[in-house]
Amino acid sequence: MTHVEDELNSQPACWIRAAEEAGRHRAALPDPGERVAVVGCGTSYFMAQAVAALREGSGRGETDAFAASEFPAGRSYDRVVALTRSGTTTEVLRLLGELKGRTPTTAVTADPGTPVTKAADDLVVLDYADERSIVQTRFATTALTLLRAHLGLHTGAAVTDARTALTGPLPQGLVECTQFTFLGRGWTVGLANEAGLKMRETSLSWTEAYPAMEYRHGPISITTAGTATWMFGEAPDGLAEQVRATGGLWVGSGLDPLAELVRAQRLAVAVAASRGLDPDRPRHLTRSVILAP
Image 1 (cartoon, rainbow, N blue to C red):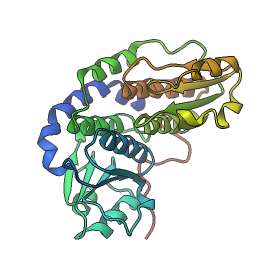
Image 2 (cartoon, one colour):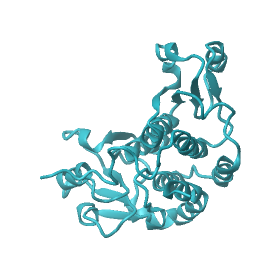
Image 3 (cartoon, rainbow, N blue to C red):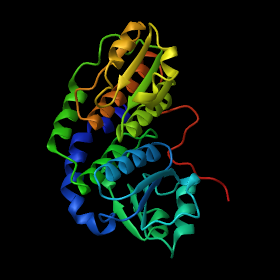
Image 4 (cartoon, rainbow, N blue to C red):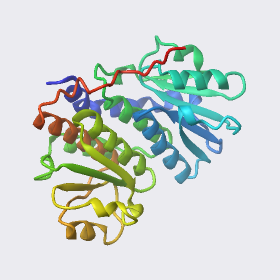
């Protein structure tokens, strides 16, 4: 078993622990009503998108998501939350340094023995979700589970669905597809973006991701036999039928959207295996992007 497979299979246990420990981290996480920005790079940026949509959509306060390198310097927030598995990503550390002393910051990380410990004002450590793999799976979903639980939006059904996602068969013909499009609505747009990234990193697949209502505005033109369109969450009326009419494969969502991401992670590994690729050694990637001064 590869590191990626081992780590993605451990996600239900990690989610249970994160939900149980959410209350212990309350002081480091945003209070209701605060104006908040959530930042990250790569996978962590897409998790930030999901967190921001969840928090604002549930009435907890205005919440934005940014790639750490694109944070608007002139905008004020009550707190900035940085998601960083490694604790060493250059763009995140630079931003936290710029905010030091003027905006409270919290870092959610897997490794407390890294520079982010001193860069952030508060720290949430999910060391049990750390990974040997370059490709992120369990840290990302565990961080999101922690924040869902902090918002009161996590339930045991997500864990049950994750177990189903790990054991149930993938839709017939999905691994053989040559192009994959992932769709979301609200907080699941971030999950769709992450599913696309996972497929690109792990299996070198051609993937795209969009808000579901945008799919009819051009992207559906690429859909045909041999392509797959995967919906995270409830689909807009009539979209499944439109995709099927193109000859493309429609993949609906019957699980908790975060569990659907686990199923997409499995697909990425399966496609990599079918192409003779090692998912533990993705092309041109390292565990953390550390830029020279």
